[in-house]
Length: 209
Image 1 (cartoon, one colour):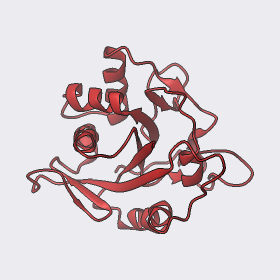
Image 2 (cartoon, rainbow, N blue to C red; image 1 turned 180 degrees about the vertical axis):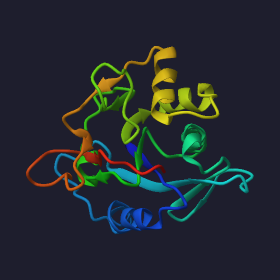
Image 3 (cartoon, rainbow, N blue to C red; image 1 turned 120 degrees about the horizontal axis):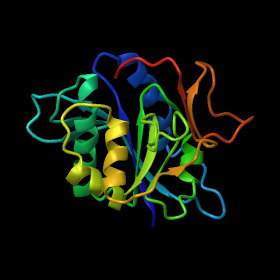
């Protein structure tokens, strides 16, 4: 049975954004308020956590909907928080795919669970054509791709999405681009709804996580 774990990067300084996530798709996971169509979705089992970092942590530890990781919380260290998330996920029975997103992105849970990866290891949207990596607002990693990040993404600082892309390229993993379903640099009010088939959208104006 295919399972997916959603990891949502957040910052301690953004409680309002975390609360919105907790009240939307994480709440839907807990209450099973998502569609189980016939035929079944690509991912019939789902879990989700908010990803926060602190140097006071000795090791990764989950507290309900929060996964606290042993790394700095500042924006420039998201690369290490993402790697720590992959390391923790690989030690857990989280399933076949990991979806990394941000707390200011709008996620349509049903559509993510119904998304057909066609076996690709690395799927997302390019924020600009030709950059060669998935925007950090949201991307899918197979278990094999997550292991590449966990084992090989050793940079301490930098852009998390760029470094994930570099790790994928170094391992010969191709980015599967889906700018139709994964939407980046959108207006503040643009979101997945009945008039589109977006899996998620993220705003053009970002706050540092």
